Image 1 (cartoon, one colour):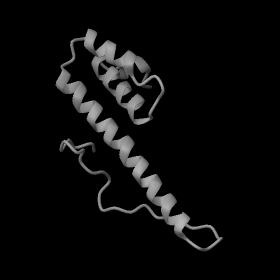
Image 2 (cartoon, one colour):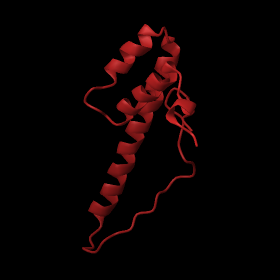
Image 3 (cartoon, rainbow, N blue to C red):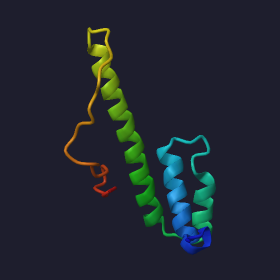
Amino acid sequence: MTTTADVALAPEVLALASLAAFIAANHPKKGLCQLKILRNLNVSQAHIDLVVDIARHLRDETGQIIDSEFDAVYASAEDKPVNIAVTGGTCCTPTAKGNVCC
């Protein structure tokens, strides 16, 4: 049986993942505690920038998809429920800076 101790993440990895989650979720705490931890652990600014870029891209992309789906329903003149399929050729797109997120 696998325990939490068997799958522990390095503090740097945990803080980077947590920072990404805070940003992508648009959490009110903004991941500032994780940023402080990362800086105290001497994680490179380049690594932090990459995680911030990807998290913001995913957050923004989610908003665009939700808005698009809303607009499609809103534009519909019918009063019946509408099933909206997920569209797009790939599971995700690169960030504006060209970083791959999946």
